[in-house]
Length: 138
Image 1: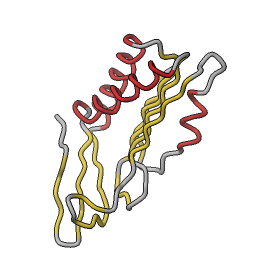
Image 2 (image 1 turned 90 degrees about the horizontal axis):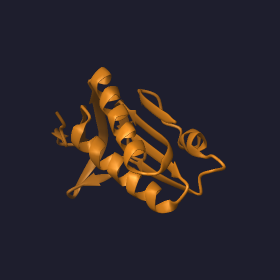
Image 3 (image 1 turned 180 degrees about the vertical axis):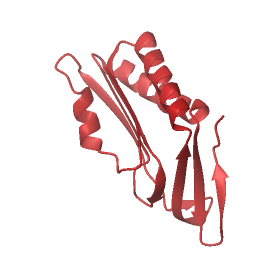
Image 4 (image 1 turned 120 degrees about the horizontal axis):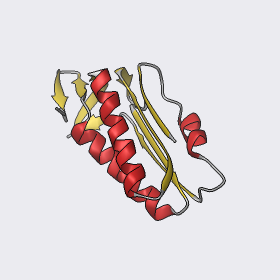
């Protein structure tokens, strides 16, 4: 099972975990990205995320399909938020379930690392004295 989503609404951690929780799965790994309060010693006011949605959804699906092909994973959720997010809010959730924990851990790490490298979602960090686009992908 694959669940891919890009939304401008708050992401629901419990709902994501519920989607991957199945009796045959003994391990669930969840990555929750949150907006931190500082970057390189500068206070963060907010983050802004933009996406080329059609391409981003396609790339996220490719990641999920690669995970299912490479590891003994039964279910994967990749949800990302767009728009303006405040400190403490959640821009990304990845949840993976597998029969065994090693597959879940490895697949989850691969999914977030690949998402940051290949999915066209851009992040702007806003500070009191300016702003900067960071971690731009294709």
